[in-house]
Image (cartoon, rainbow, N blue to C red; front, side, top):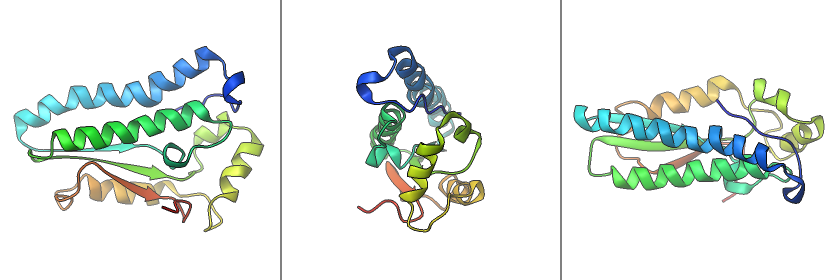
Length: 159
């Protein structure tokens, strides 16, 4: 689940919308991790894969709440991954560029076009592409990566 909130400048951003984006896009991830980790510790194994966004690394203009919340998910992933590094629990996240899903219904056409213009491959990501990486991150084969951030950005991530 995720919401983008309105496409507005920071100084015009409605505070109530800011709080809604933070509550779902950041707080929701925290609550899920907080609930899952004790069970994973008891079982001696676990994989957490959080979904952030390239916006959390680069920031998108007119999407400050979404970008900020996703940056928070990245920070949470890195911190929790380090906290659990000496266990058999791995915590990673993916940072996709834009993937055409129902979330596009919350965005202006101008913002959608802006996002596409930033992707060198020249198209939006596919859900199946993101799912393939998440599947590996959730597997036993992903045993040496924790607190890591994996771009699925069509070349947008340039760092």
